[in-house]
Length: 255
Image 1 (cartoon, helix red, strand yellow):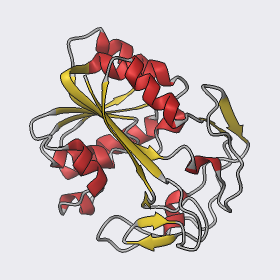
Image 2: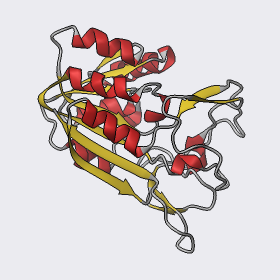
Image 3: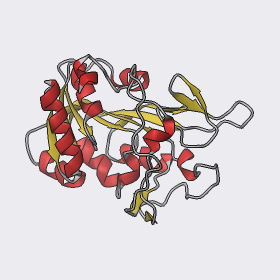
Image 4: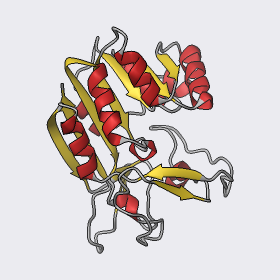
């Protein structure tokens, strides 16, 4: 709470560049999780709606909004259902923002892209920044354990999602890191979807959006996905004695 009250933001320079000037613009933050990035978008002067399927995340986001005085609308909904309901209404957005750890939970990338296109105003834009699908093929020790793409087939894991934030050993920007639960183990099995870059770009193009940029980054923000990565002010990359590999990608597309 104090971080946001004191003017903090969780957005990185990469997102800020991709978003551009959003003062007075309507923005939907897709799969917004607990709302920190959503409120950071409001700080840029946008009118923002966050959508997520998790009751816990949305409850936290609403509390964070109320207690910091940063006004945003949060909707608890299955994203595909929200697309249908919003497309049937008069509500449209200038930007659709999707970031960091969102794509892997999508079961149908084509329906997702068409849903985005349906809720954007003419001239509106989609902004995506996420972990690169090549990087997602490898486990913590660098072993190739996952397929590049499953094209909609679920990957099921007996182990739950781990504490990847703690792996970075970093707190909020400008703040002191405070360790939480030690050696956290998530008992809940989980299911993900692997989408290749071609799957994602083609889905966007097939939804009649015009691709305006596609970038690959040799580093990743906040938390390292592999052991032995080198930290440079929150940018994690492979050591210089190892072949490089894309860690993140971004794309923008216009309606």
